[in-house]
Length: 181
Image (cartoon, rainbow, N blue to C red; front, side):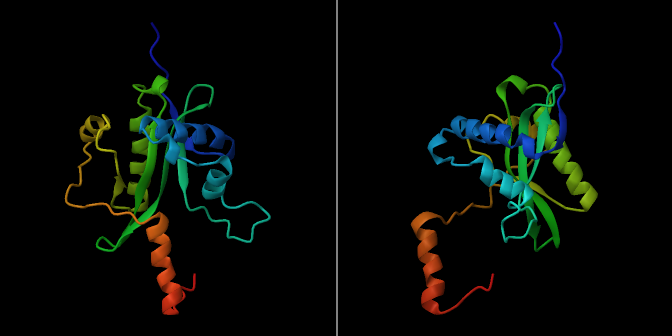
C-alpha cells in the first residue's frame, strides 16, 4: 500500500479560482448552509487579484489565498485569509476566513501545512495573531486543539447584515454625514 502524497502549499493563482470556488461550495454544503453560498469565480478573482483591467478600482487585493496541491498541481485544499489589526498589540494579524481540505486529501497533512504556512507568514512579518471562527459542531476542534489553538470563549461574535445593515447605513443619509470613502 502506498502512502498518500503530502501536498505542497503555494499561493493561489488565477487558474486555481474555479477549484477554490467549488471547494467553497463544498464547505457550505458540509456546514449545512449551501443556500447561503453565492461565491462566483469572478468575485473571487477580483478579491484575490484585484478588479479587471477595465475597472476604475485600485488593483490591490483585499483577500489572500493559499492552496494545497497534489502531485499534479491540482488544488485539494485552500485557505482564504485577510489582514486584521489589533489596536492593543499595535500590529496586524491574519484572520483565516475559510480553511477546507477535500475529503480524499484529509489525513495527508494538508490542513496542518496550510495553517503552518499562515503561521509562518505571521512570524516572518511580526504579526501576533492567527485567528479564525469555527462552527461549534465541527470535528476539527480536536485538530485545532492539538496544534495549540485556544478557543476564545469570552468574546461573542456579532453580525450586522441584510435589512439591519441597510437601516443602519440609512442613518448616515438622514444624519447628513458622509464617510468620505
